[in-house]
Length: 283
Ligand SMILES: [Zn+2]
Image (spheres, rainbow, N blue to C red):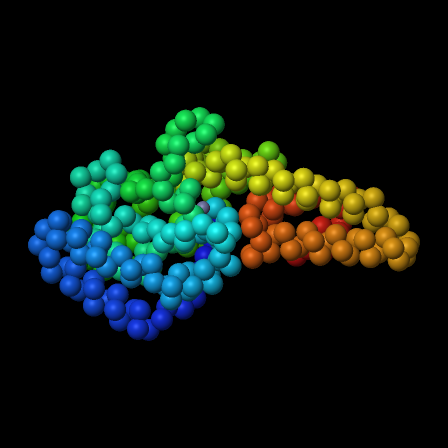
């Protein structure tokens, strides 16, 4: 997961006007059946290509949760705060945020929907889950402003739109996503990362395999530079070119538009040592 700066989200002005008008209408309904039916009838608001393009532009078409490229799957727009109900609670859902841009996260099917994990048989994926660190602070009043709501509630799930959240996830060279902090050091950070890894299904087999393949590629590039670096220092032009090409490739793997760039960044950093001064050239 990498940080997505929502303040840079370039939403179409006509889309924003339409979404605001629909929020006002939605909030006039007295019961949840009417609201639910109105949201279903107007789902095109969050399926609108103008919105999806704006969300994709922020992440180079990658899922905001797992960084998979969304070239061939349905492009889901997740309501970070679920609109219809909140699993495990009697909360009726954050319906007043159904058409709000700040509540949207571009998500792949595995992160957004329930899927049975092929390895452990557990049903993982976000669905309607939105646990809070303190359930008593959950807001049900639609008149409370969005900023105040965000200040009061402390979501358990890691939010890609918060820079202090995305650092809670780290990786291992077998392709697994893991908690950055040990439980003893930062119990809340550990717990939030653990819950997020499950609820976003970040260790599903295919994504782990893809990260493993990426690690092998990084390892090969590092080995190539290790072999050629001293020759390059002696101005062997073939070695110089080889080192330059490999450095360029490593840099591209951790660039924001690369798939699984947070993983690549963590793995490249793991090769840091006194014998590899060239790693600092990637910064
Ligand atoms: Zn995803």
